[in-house]
Image (cartoon, rainbow, N blue to C red; front, side):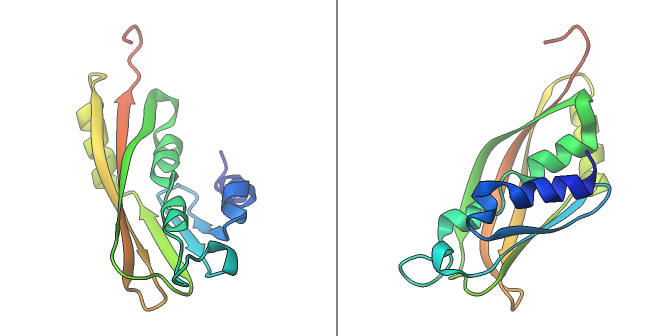
Length: 151
């Protein structure tokens, strides 16, 4: 899929546009995605800070779909689990920057070479306008290389 279509599809996806989540940037190689959410009356909680569910939603499912795009049909990639740690109240515009580097791709290749499953945790911080972390999300991914004749 083209990175521009990828961005457009996410920005048109009702659970995102309905909560004010916007994909700001996707690099052509899918190794970096930047997601932003402005504070709105419909995405804040009782304490006038970002609703925790929206903070989590802005981090789901980017690592999974980025790896699917990078690794291609030769791999199976699934979100397996997630954990969110709320560090401080989120106000204003918050941003999450997802990056996948060559070290991770080499690690995946090495750990899935024989078709075995590989469980990997990837972390993303949601930051406020002062570049302070308001939430830390750990995504646990299931990754496996498809080996012909092996199920």
